Length: 121
Image (cartoon, rainbow, N blue to C red; front, side, top):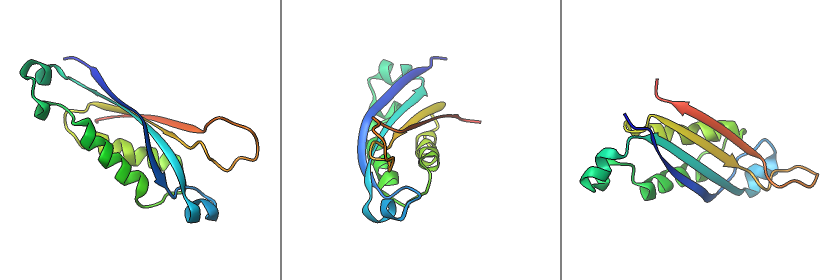
């Protein structure tokens, strides 16, 4: 069985996630990278979108999570995003990176990134 990848990189959405009250009140931009591991051979052979993951619909579902109910930890947000990806039975594994480039750190930095990899049991 093939293990192919579909990657959605740099998906941006505004969320109110964080521990500090200001993060919850003001919100900030989060950036999501999602890599799905699945077999794309059936879709390729039939040239049929219904046999693979529709990445446009996936993007909308992930943004809905980022814009939705606030959580304190980006680890929790990453898990919720992985759960969305794994809800499709064709997806065997998902790797999610959540970037928080405006994290409240009083020092110069480029980005804070939490990356998780989850697989179907």
